Length: 212
Image (cartoon, rainbow, N blue to C red; front, side, top):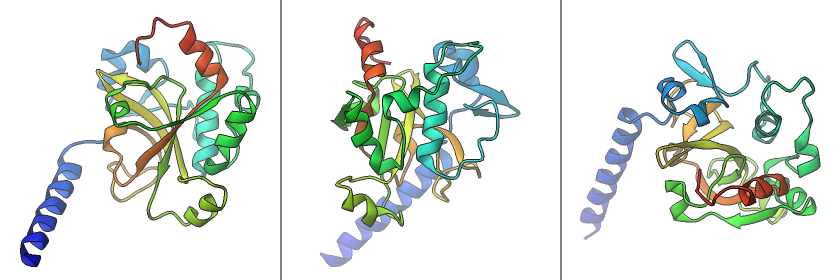
């Protein structure tokens, strides 16, 4: 029985590794042509897609999400870029963002499995992830948070949510930290919470209810 369980574990591990190696987690440049609603947040550089028009120089996921959030909330072509993240509570370390968003009349939602198919997620939503290898898990637990990493939802490709985040990992393809990934392809990150600012909620209220 023990050997059988070990064999099943090895098979599962092999399948996971194969899945990661041969199925891309990163959104490709074809998205720019096929999904204009999503591509307005992206730019094409060589064979890659990025969100920011510059190298952010950030090394912290929370500050990177703040930069992307401001780009998404400002009208395209605005001469003056407003720092909406301060007004909306999208500030601080990942595990401190919930209290700031709540203070600014936003909401914190439990992540549901159906959200992996885009149901109940909207552009501008911030997702908190549990990362088992994070050095900050203890600090996050001390702040009553179950996560140490955040990413922001850009939109979706068909029903697959697309996120932007600052995360360098040997488990993911593309050797860089500023990433545009499919939400269902970010092993070993595990989504646990959705942080929705009051501004994003107001935008949702003006929509027809169609997700992403």
